[in-house]
Length: 192
Image: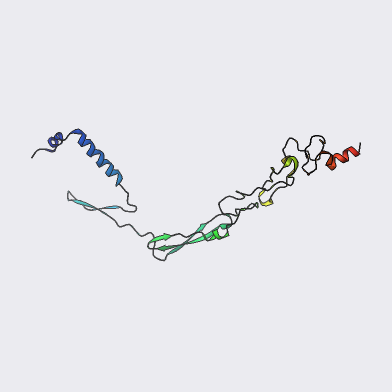
């Protein structure tokens, strides 16, 4: 019988390389660790043959065992009961999720997504006519609700808290009256 080294010399290098690559891929593909399994050596004293045996994986839980866990955020904060079925913990939906509702400006996480006062429908400022044309929105102030818009919130270049420019063809104070149809312009001219 020929020694192994002589047999290997007879195999072309390309063939050996292909076998090596295939063997490596198989080792990588099937190398799956087994959780909680610990090797135990049986025998193995003073040169005797030893065998490695895996301990059985312990149960995760005992049948019908229960435990509780906090779940949910905001209005949905609750306590969840988890039950052991077939040696595994079974989680159900957080019972507090039934309290989820549309988010409103109140400083509370109404929709239970972990954030208070997000994804709100914007509220228009009080003045929506003239140069204010509905493009200005109130700001949410948490527990205080929606803030009323002040003169500084209307940042249009032509905005005036009371109509002063009475010749430009615009409703500058956003009250629906343009120039001389605005009481501010009429009153100012009658006081001259």
